[in-house]
Picture 1 (cartoon, protein in one colour):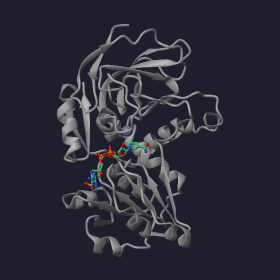
Picture 2: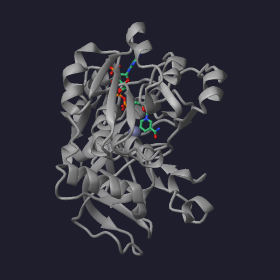
Picture 3: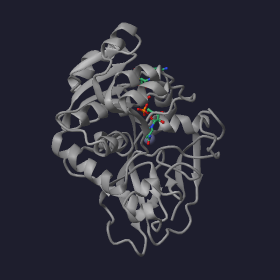
Picture 4: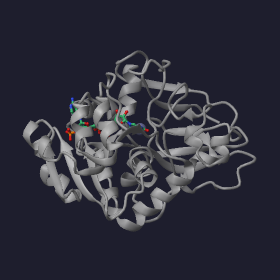
Length: 335
Ligand code: NAP
Ligand code: ZN
């Protein structure tokens, strides 16, 4: 096999530079994907900056991959060369623990991430265990499918876990890559949707995406008006917010589910949790079976990422635009 070429971060916060590596022998359970598209998830920015203290340099970011299988390992029966597939955040798990046995591989303690301590999708090719590589339904164009592989599954999975249905009132905080998909999926489940955004310029588009209401999260009065009204709030922001205000926006038994990762610990008051049996929880991506289900639902119900395309070589420019919250709503790199 020839060298794989991509764009790697060599130090915290540095510009990505061309990088080649030898992937070695293809493992018996691995597949290699020839990449056509890769979304830029904000988690890539966190990793490049080493916000979580887990980054090892150099590494190639990217975990919203679409492409075609170019090689399959000797034991792979589920995928064939030439097939169009997607790969998200998770690229392997132990396959043997109680969580893997339950089909909750995303909870496996030995879970491996596509671009943590290994090289991801801002590249011409990438490898992963075949169990974490999903065929892409024909109904989904590659450019719109890429953001579903991490952004889509991360918002879809908690809606299934928390049983969102036509009686639900769902809040989505932050209308970015994850948030704009969350609005669409919540509507597919039949819920009434409130979009919370710090960008008033996003109101019209949030409504076009399916939001029934739009709240400027910087307006104290507007935030107070929604008190006690929501069953599930999905926070997709990567910033610190007034979390108590969101907890107060929940109905009794309601849940604030964190998927975005704020930089600081959350200071939350216990009383609203106690008095209304309200919960604060989180969600990591989704299992491989949920991923396949989500892709099928997106294809059948017309959930479409709104994307801005960049050539792979323009990854640094695209990342700058994501940093400035200027992308509507997902930057996708193409080869
Ligand atoms: P994104 O496209 O950059 O969107 C984030 C949104 O947060 C922005 O569009 C903006 O929405 C809001 N925001 C940004 N800066 C803000 C600030 N200073 N104050 C208030 N709001 C701000 O990011 P993304 O790709 O959707 O990812 C969002 C977060 O989810 C990241 O932390 C990422 O690491 C995390 N994530 C977690 C998982 C998981 O498994 N749990 C998976 C994928 C990503 P408005 O303009 O509408 O306010
Ligand atoms: Zn991601």
